[in-house]
Length: 220
Length: 220
Image (cartoon, rainbow over all chains, first blue to last red; front, side, top):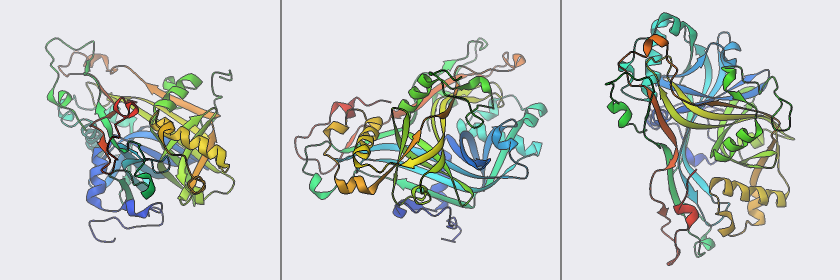
């Protein structure tokens, strides 16, 4: 597990529960991080765990989370803050013959480490562009440029991807052998994050501004 | 904020970042918890934060998370473990004229407190049924009953809903006044967790077992 294409397994990143579902493969982990939209960031404040949903992006070997200079996370840190960042994709409900064997198909990544503030303006602008592109590819180039004041009041944390693992479940239900004869429908219901309505144009759009392909053709 | 229909605001549950988005209203919080499918549970292990996606259900004034007796969370606890449980619903991408004002419409709930193991078999069976119903209403009554061995090997944690807050963002982009004239499409792209494919029947279904309405009519 120390080959270049896998993350090293540590005490924290090691998948303990159902280890067969665990993977440390960089390609698979990068794919999950690309597909995810939000992450949950856990940190410790006054000795207590806190878990906050945040927007993120990955550039090279770092995961960046996007917060505010006023947030609890950023206020509590000086040089850096120990975090666990988790991205979870739900792929489907696994409906078995017993409650016990019900499950979900999912892919989740957890990255552990010390998140550090990004302070350089040039770097901030590059990362914020990547965050927009992560959320909706094709959009960043169409926006007006960030101002110095915006860059200053935006806080970013970077986490080097070193201690990382993923858990993945795929496939149908695994029932007890004697349950397969029961007259209970079983299988998988595919779910995911999807566009569930027409785009709602802002009321103050100037006349003649058409909806761009990066919005009409959006999917994750 | 101490009325019966709101949770008390504490140092931890208080929404600091953009407090106008915060709410402590029990009805709104219960609605978010009902609609969510998975939660992220943060806890502290060996002084480090850990964040794990889990399945949950709410019954009366408690949130139950469903783990395994082998999981790190349950191994690390004796009488109880301090947790922060967060449920996040993404409702849409908010596309502004500048990167800075891009946002998401979302609803998230965080509940803080000490999670305790559920050990009573009768209670476990009731909660596990509620977990199945939370995930797919109408299904639990159609399943075979849980066995004693299954109940014993399933671990559940309960967290009393006392220190709870929600954050909610709705509506379109709020751009800088001078940006409204720019020829950039802006608005909201609605997103949610949705069924994204036909149900996939298990290969070993007996002949004549039809797909039930709780599967064909599923939505969140």
